[in-house]
Length: 514
Ligand SMILES: NC(=O)C1=CN([C@@H]2O[C@H](COP(=O)(O)OP(=O)(O)OC[C@H]3O[C@@H](n4cnc5c(N)ncnc54)[C@H](O)[C@@H]3O)[C@@H](O)[C@H]2O)[C@@H](O)CC1
Ligand SMILES: Nc1ncnc2c1ncn2[C@@H]1O[C@H](COP(=O)(O)OP(=O)(O)O)[C@@H](O)[C@H]1O
Ligand SMILES: [K+]
Image (cartoon, rainbow, N blue to C red):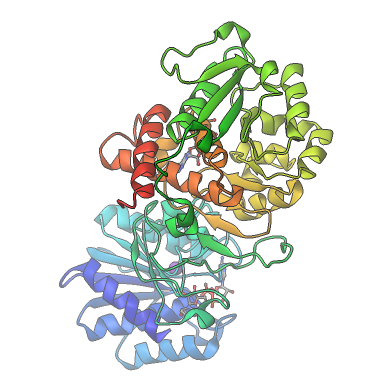
């Protein structure tokens, strides 16, 4: 706690500037303890500090917390002349607000005085245009799941202690955390999270690079259902998670060296989805890309990308493929269903997206077939598709994205990419990862088709399915981030532009240029 307070005071000092007034709100548990230590240290550094505690009675103040640490921090603050205020002083031009109300111990929605303090912090930050520093986790955000309560602190900066928590990186987390920074507090792996390496202290801007520690483990708290062995382990996806497959091409290679990707979809009115997937597969290096369109009126050539081999979908069922993507614009008619039945049992890696997932949710026999496949399967649902597959609601999926993705991975014996802000990749063996690349510019039509195309391209080039899923998700988001940094987005970013950016980045990664 003392170390947490020091780290917080250092950051607060840089955020508040000189001579500013700092408002600190302290809760009843150890998060409040961190706030008392921070307040004491900032007073020692001559800042004007106003500290408002949720409970001012020492007896109730330590309930549920580490009573010794929190009480000692409170006593030390008061002993050095600090005052516990009942309410937030009026008319103070706050330079910084520090939220030390709740951290990982939030156990119910904030109500009454707790909710009032959170609302006041948010309102004052808006009124004074001042930064809000959340200690460990913005109060009201579930640090396990990324689900925000209706009353949650909207921080501009979050300083998370020991390691990042999953809920800071997915769902509502990034919007409420602002710039995320992780301080390991000097703890080594064993102390932080047995069996993992320590988290780094690097600054993590929202939606961008995670801490650059070797494997950036996350503290996994209590995801709903315990997964099968090996024990579930949360990590942030980093390039090193799949770097061993990033390599330059051998000179003596030919198109057969990079596999055939087969993509089935494009029912009448939905050819665009399959074309986007096909173009992505081509530009991410598949040796040959066959596109089986259900809309047979479309013709046999895509004039924009004549390299794609367009075929009637039914004729591709027997085509030799090294990897298969089923679903972009597939529709849910009888032909789609028949093709699914034909192709699901095959011995090659299979990606199921979009309508293929919807068919899976309504046809138990197909689901059983997918579960018993010999080759790897990757499912790429967005939250709506995940909800249908789980016979649940989008709200339920979004309120615990890790649990939802993990449940699907178990149910279908597949690797699952649950898309959206902070995509979750849950692997069939129980491990799960959070992706921190990507931005809201990706909330545009066709972006998911591009992900499917990137994925099938990597699979056709022989990548193992688990690492292909991690790499495709990471690359897809990183490409969109690159474009947004260059002003091509987030507003108006298109799926087609993301394909070209992904190709550029992938080539640089494979060449070791970055
Ligand atoms: N575990 C560790 O090694 C460290 C923990 N630290 C801090 O400790 C925090 C966790 O401490 P705690 O476990 O005490 O948890 P918190 O301080 O997050 O909150 C727990 C307290 O809040 C109450 N509470 C929860 N939800 C409430 C609600 N909606 N309305 C009113 N009261 C509510 C609980 O009854 C309990 O008293 C971390 O987030 C971090 O800030 C740091 O000091 C660094 C080291
Ligand atoms: N706010 C966001 N932040 C990060 N990534 C996003 C965001 N919104 C969408 N994406 C990504 O964009 C893609 C959208 O996929 P999907 O919803 O299937 O789109 P479509 O059906 O139009 O192809 C997914 O990879 C998803 O993770
Ligand atoms: K907090």
